[in-house]
Structure formats: C-alpha cells, structure tokens
Image 1 (tube, rainbow, N blue to C red):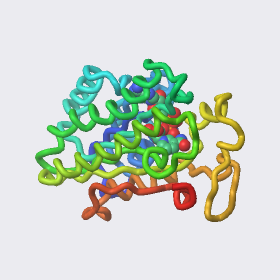
Image 2: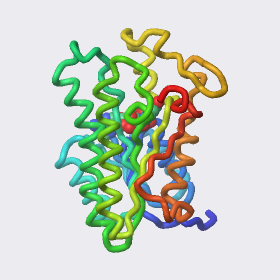
Image 3: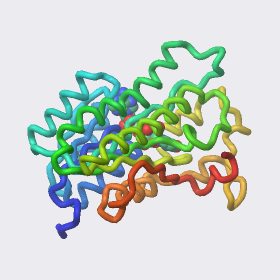
Image 4: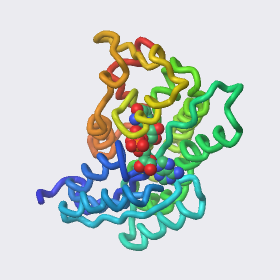
Length: 263
Ligand code: NAD
C-alpha cells in the first residue's frame, strides 16, 4: 500500500456501518489509517468489518449507542487503549428523526432525535478531546442543509433543530479547541442516497410535493438530485487533511446548490 498522509493515523467514525460513515471508513482504511468504527447496528457493523478487512490496516468495530454517555466513553477508551492516540474524528452517526407536525410529535420522538443527532455528537467530541489535545487533529461533523439553510419540508422540526444545534456546537468547539491545534468543521449535505433517505421516502406524511427539490440545474425529484456517500466523503477527506490546515469553524455545503434556491 502506498504511503499517504493518513497512513497509521487513528480515525474514529461514528455511524460507520452504513451510508456516509461506511464510505468514510473505506476511504480512510484504503489510505492506510487505523479506523475505529462505532455504530448501534451490530449486524451491519460485522458486515462492514468483513468488507474492510481486505485493505490490511487495523479496524476496530465497536457496537455503541452514540447517545449513551457510558457507551461512548467506553468505546473511545477501547480505541485509544489499542492505539494510544486519536488524530481524526468523524462524528457522523444520526437518524432522520420522526417526521410529524409539531402538534403531533411525541416528546419521546423529539428527545430521541435530539439525543442521537445532537447529544451523540457532543459525547463523541467530549471523550475524544483528551486524546487529541497533545498533538492536535481534525474533527468533522455531519450536519445537514436542513439545520442551516433549507427548511422546505414540514415535519422535520426535531431533525432541523438538532442539526442547527450541531452547527452551533461545531463553532463553539472550533473556538475552544483551536488552542490545542484541533480544527473542527462540519459537512452539510443536501440529500444523499443512503438508508436515512429510504426512511424519509417511505414516510406517509411526506408528500410528493415536499420531496421535490430545486437545484440550479433544474427542478428534479429529490433522489435524482442526491449526492453519493463518496461525494460527501470527498469533503470529509479534505477537511481531515493538511490541505484544509487553515480552515476551522466552517460549514461545507455538499448539496448541488440546492440551498441557494431554497435557503
Ligand atoms: P445511514 O442511515 O446510512 O447511516 C447512519 C448510521 O448511523 C447507521 O449505520 C446507523 O446504524 C447509525 N446510528 C443511528 N443511530 C445511532 C446511535 N444511536 N448510535 C450509533 N450509531 C447510530 O444514513 P447516512 O445518510 O449515512 O447518515 C449519516 C449522517 O448524515 C447522519 O448524521 C445524517 O443526519 C446526515 N445526513 C444525511 C443526509 C442524507 O440525505 N442521507 C443528508 C444530510 C445529512
């Protein structure tokens, strides 16, 4: 394997068993990094591990609920005990959240989305900091256009609120951690073709009109305008690399220009 700037770096990825997280795990493994993969879905995590073993670097899959304080602390301890360092964190795990009008949203559904999409990101960063403080590194979060620019779909209040909070948290983390040489940024995808969007497509409350997205290149059904997970990972790789060495506290939109028309 050819040496890259990620060779022997330790990368922690949450939500690594499918979609964007799995594509990132493949990218960093192929580049020679040691990758710790956290996910709540044990079955998919096992399949992903098999898939990645052929690249010949060390992989550490850990079943973990990202919204559970003890789970996250224990998982990061396990990874850092093995490799004794942490260089790159991709806080990516998330759920689409229950789509329901505010009036009908249950408190449990509201809390679940905030716990996974926002608190999960906080816990990941919180327990990673002690392992990055001495040498610096890069933290990248997966936020969304939905939390920042695009509010076109009624029923998304819990998801949009969690992602908006994540962007604010990213900026505060960039501010606090800059002194340690830790950069913190977020990727904000529009629609990406993954399991999360399956769930949205199947939901009866989302009608055909709200699933139409306007792009500068013309109005298209949502899925035809989606990014691939790899297109998001291109941005993640850039934010993890030395090429983005002077970039911190930034949101990078990967949305085909969708938010120019809807924001
Ligand atoms: P995905 O469903 O394929 O992947 C999400 C992964 O997170 C899954 O493997 C799932 O098991 C894991 N996960 C869910 N809850 C968890 C928990 N409590 N603890 C640990 N792992 C958990 O979907 P994806 O699109 O790859 O999602 C990745 C991120 O991208 C999410 O944060 C999502 O909000 C964000 N995002 C997705 C889109 C899109 O259109 N797909 C758009 C914008 C942002």
